[in-house]
Length: 355
Ligand SMILES: *Cc1c(COP(=O)(O)O)cnc(C)c1O
Image (cartoon, rainbow, N blue to C red; front, side):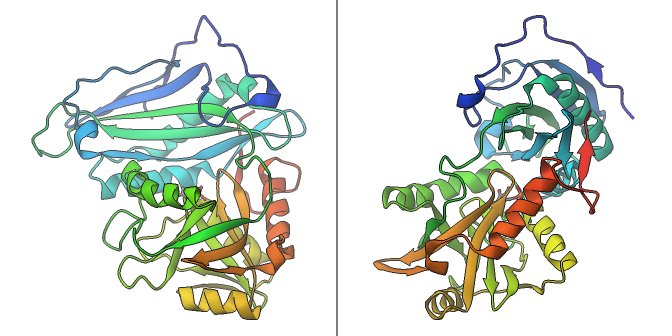
């Protein structure tokens, strides 16, 4: 494995007051980075003081969006230790995203080693306050200085981290989603399954429209038939239908969430019936009205689980479970966060100790 050099900062930044940790705007003391050059491969793996980066305005990422990222967290455990949740899954997914965007493959074991060293070095930044964690953002960008379309020959991989509070200010409150019938997030054959900035850029307009109407997120439908449920904002969606856990099947346009995967594995281990299949908007609508849909929630790293209290299309609305958090949703939330924060046993071997 490539050597990872470490240069420590001489001027540690001031830490945030635990009561006012912002989401995603204040970063820790160090970062990891390495460069790729075709012919040479990845080189100069290093942990360095957190710093600004300088690029030529002709750098490819600014023009053609050659960018992918990941999102995961490190958690403070009750014994004062620090652990991460399934980081191998994030790096595996990042390589799949890289393949789709013609960015270079990287060594997942090296990335995990670098991440572990980085989090260990900045371990004092991992919050000890209930619900808070250290958010980790690996990124890869195309760095050729070339605005002709010649393919990617140079890239930069870096990892930055920041302390974060719980994602939603009001905690586990059920939210309402607006079913978006105009914009689509992704299509099969496109980049929906890849975690790339471009997906977010094109999702912003619908999200802002929904927010202006007072909804928390949009519910995305498929881009081909505009008939099937795909995701809720930047999260996967799940339903409890007749006691079964149902979620849209991965079809190329849905992002394969690690939270999604973990919830499905956990529910199966409890003996709960799990279905990955198409869920139409019509089935959703009728199911909310007649009670077949007992619970609905979104899931992802940032918020873990967000209960859904209702859906809206145009002027009509339906509610789920009287706008209350369901039993299954709560059980999933408590079990998953218990494992993540090291308050409960991890029978699945999902956590990776940092220190
Ligand atoms: C990252 C992401 C998710 C959730 O993935 P996790 O691995 O669970 O955090 C879901 N949908 C979209 C569009 C995403 O970008």
